[in-house]
Amino acid sequence: MNDTTTQILTDRGKDYGVFMDLASIAQFLKTVLREQPGWVVLDSDMKESLDIIVTKTARILNGNPKHLDSWDDIAGYARLVADRLREDSLK
Image (tube, rainbow, N blue to C red; front, side, top):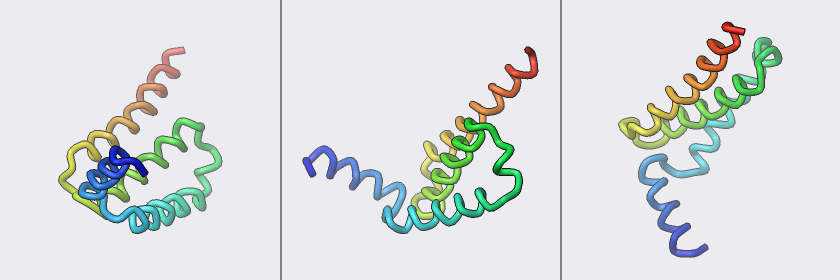
């Protein structure tokens, strides 16, 4: 790995914790989502938004819960779906 990549990973680790731990939390939560009957009726953007929200949630649980960017990202991905649904309702 080059120095830039190493620095990025070091910085991310400070906010998000050990990657293997984060991955375990995220994959567990994503499995729970996919096991729900409602998962199959979701649109692609809904599924992807929930996947990303779960990853951001795992980062919060595994790392620094006061890292503002994680909370803003969660709101942003939910907003993308909400905006699309509003747009669809006007058609």
